[in-house]
Image 1 (cartoon, rainbow, N blue to C red):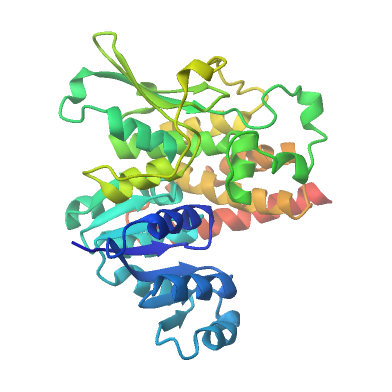
Image 2 (tube, rainbow, N blue to C red; image 1 turned 120 degrees about the horizontal axis):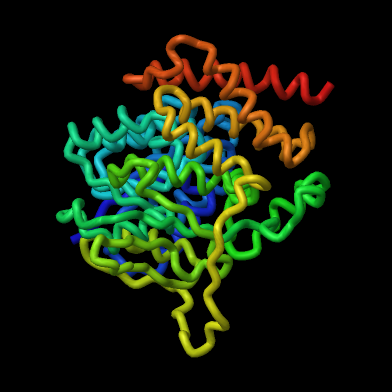
Length: 392
């Protein structure tokens, strides 16, 4: 039977990889329902035409004219603006790849969840910003959440979910980013170009910077807590530069189960798309005889405080994870624009958390999407004020 699929964020790296798998699949295996993008009308239109999508949505209304011109005569429906993203996500589909980066992906992904089908979750912020609300919606609507982050996908594959008492801890692996061997002094002079040069993974700019600061692993720590219903104390992070072991689960009998594979996002994407069956993915196969070695070491949270801040936010609960994420998004954008230095990213996040904690409601978790958005926007304003003072 043909599986219908929607891709939220089709022009990003996850969207590209998902469409690459679709392009290699046997004719008639998949039917594209909807594709969405933030700003890239040209690429979105080309994808829609190639994959014969029914509907496309572009978040930026200023590009509406471009999109309309590019789709003229194709018969493909289109919409623009944030509400169009929600419309795309609301159209019935067997599988939705939720790959919109940042807090902007929350409402469209929730709209997809409310259809009660399979969701490939490649957006960390849905759980970081709105973990309780998001998971409550997953349960209420009977949706199946399939993690696409390589680390969470690895845990999903090896976790014996029917025996939670048998699990001792989850172990998230991290590449360590491009600066794992840098001194604190060297980190002071890191440039935008340095930070975007990841040694292993090919990702979008925001996630690549998060990997360089280790905030990416911090967000994954929070995400894992909600996905697998484990407290912070049951989740460890270990640096594994080769990125061959994507994560592990340790059981109370001493067994450690790991998922291994080449560092290629098409593996977890294919696993999510095909679940509960496995489908072919065009990835390089591991040759164990040629592996030079697998190394592991503890992350240095002194040099990379973002990971410490994320764990503290998870343990604090309430609004802390939402504030953490909002402040990080603002700081990363400022770094990419050349407004602040690399070390200012984590510093400004910490200062935003400290200032937000003065609010009496800080320890109360947002219960609705509207509350999440309000906390997110307030945190962004605090972060902008702090960055303004930093730049003076």
